[in-house]
Image 1 (cartoon, rainbow, N blue to C red):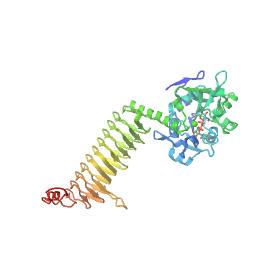
Image 2: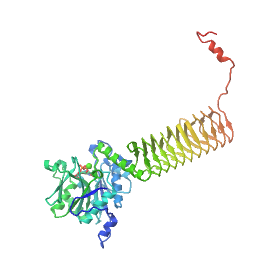
Image 3: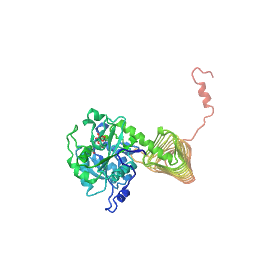
Image 4: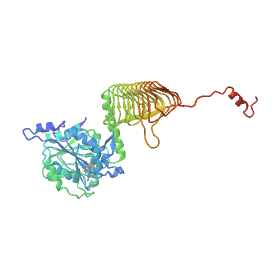
Length: 490
Ligand code: UD1
Ligand code: CA
């Protein structure tokens, strides 16, 4: 990770709550606190969904920021929520403390709302925008480190942007100290030329927030309380702000519209794939592979092109997944092959082979070494080890015993139009091709059904069930019929 020293003496170094306590020597132990600003509607997203909840790599935008804070040593970050507050709280869950900003009167106002939740903590306070999901715990820890090292009232993360449009610009005095931030809307032409921008990541001394936040005015283009104005207030009372300039501007990038969302999602996706690759997973084509942040994949598994792995999926080692496969919230054992298929909330035992064109729906559970072939749909069904469902089959609300073979074209009729019913197929059963199994139904161990049967009654162990019309052969009939064809001589 690349950081550059930007203020005389600023030596960025990773810091965490522990280092902070060491730094304060004999003083009472104080933990790092953190505030995430996530109350905005995100007008530029043009969406009914609050900005904080737009997802990247499977996680809401604000969740990425919250996780980075926790990684940096914040025990329970304070989330400032506002637009769609109830929905945001419900989705982000209880690892955060919530503060509601009823009206969104600016970033400074949002922070002010969090003051009561800070109580009397006297450790450093990280503040982060909820719309910068590429931030890492390591980067936040560095920012804390810079604030502590220099006993600064504020350490501000900055970076040089080739196109700084839309960002607040960092204004320095003659000695190079940051003395204020000018927002794009309030900047004059010369200030707009400044390439170093405020990224909205700060580490404050708590007294600064308590004493200066209530002093923020609204005399600016937007008529809002800007958090950025704290830098000027600190300078006015002779305090010290330092900047930590990040060479990798992407880490701090804000997301204001959907194109920036797509760009940030792509960067995060590559980060996830890189981590997997370095942990021993072969990612054949990072450009067409989508893996969510929470996914775990074992060593020597190969992820082939055009594959999407979502949610809390766990994939074992030595598997081959894809090409053209979507796996959502699944558990897949070691040594499985899954290709050109959809798997959703399914559990797959080790050594299974699934695909092409299989559709495993929620509640599917496959034992070890099960074979599921083309055009097979399974839902809410438990399939025993070494069973085979090789072609053109639907199995729903059923159990299939070990070593059972389900012939091509078998349909389990689990639904009578009013209710769903259960089908129990035993071990070592042979279901003939094109069987129709009408639930509720029990087929005993070792039983067989004749191809083309409609099975409506239970089949005892080891029996053969035939449920079809008997075949009649009419000798010579075809020849006579052909003779009757018009224009055909006898
Ligand atoms: C802000 C900074 C700007 C900086 C940029 C970096 C201010 C005034 N400007 O601008 O200097 O370059 O971030 O990305 O701080 N929010 C609230 N309540 C509010 C307003 C905003 O919680 O009343 C939250 C938003 O949900 C968002 C974050 O604060 O997550 C930043 O707000 P946004 O409106 O995106 O600020 P920018 O215009 O990007
Ligand atoms: Ca923003």
